[in-house]
Structures are given as C-alpha cells and as structure tokens.
Image 1 (tube, helix red, strand yellow):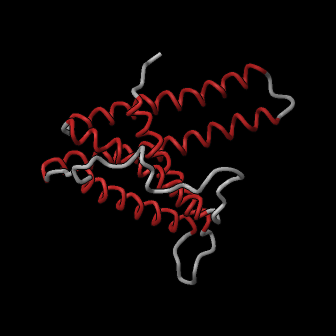
Image 2: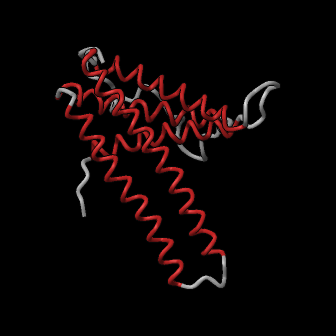
Length: 192
C-alpha cells in the first residue's frame, strides 16, 4: 500500500470540492435563458470561471513569480483536468456497479469485476494525482508549499459553503454553517 502524505490528501479534497461545486452549480441551473447555448454549456462556463478564480487566488496566496506561473499554472490545470476525467470515469464505473447490484440475476463474478473496475479507476487517478502534485511541489519553495496548505484548506471551506448555497442553503441537520475564518486554517502572519 502506498503511503500518501496528508498534504496530498488535503489537496485532493480541496480540488475535489472545486469539481463538486462546478458540477453542482451547473446542475442547479438546468433551465437556460432564451438564446443560451446547449444545457452543458452553463456547467462548463461555471467550471471554467471557478477554475480561473482558484488560479488567480492561488497566484496571490503563494506569491508566485512570473517564472513559476509558467510552470505551476499549467500543472495545476492538468490536475484539475485529471480530476474531471476521474469524476467522469468513476461515475460510469459506479453506474455499472449499481446496475449489477440492482440486477437480481447478476453473478458474483460480474459484480467482482465491476467493483475491481471502480477501484482501478480510483487507483489510477491517485497515481496520476500524486505525480502531478509532486511536479507542482518541485516548482515551489518550502514557504510556498506551506502557504499551499492554508490556501487549500480555505478553498475547501469556501467551496463547501458555495456548494451549500447552490443547493439552496441546506446546511444539514447539525452543526454551524461553514465559516471562512476558522483559526485552525488562519493564514500565517506574513501576509498570505
């Protein structure tokens, strides 16, 4: 079993939240105004706008130099694309598994193969994600890597709140709303 650092897991959660918000935001606006493009165009526009916002904020939060921007930003975009690809492949694999589980005539062998396909999609993605995360880290200083931890934690909270807002403000049965000013994830004092 490969060991994954908490930093990589936290980054995965943050970028996963971004993908979830983009998908949810696109799904909550299925009705299109007159003259709008195809139904999926709105979701694509929302996703693209959110990714641009994340990248712009990341540049500022990490204090990226122009030279770093030319290498880090494309790698972050590849990571976001890898997440979208993984989400699509996983949805398809999960749909197949769900169909087999609901089919009373499906045999154990079919279910096993489908379950293995879901796990392979996840394993392949984790390997790809780790490689991309390592490539990003190689371009950052230790200070920037530390800033990234705080950036991702804040991004995760913001995305969770936006997802909740997009879903009609439902916050669940217990617990306070997601806030942006948790002390645990407060930025360092040097201006992040």
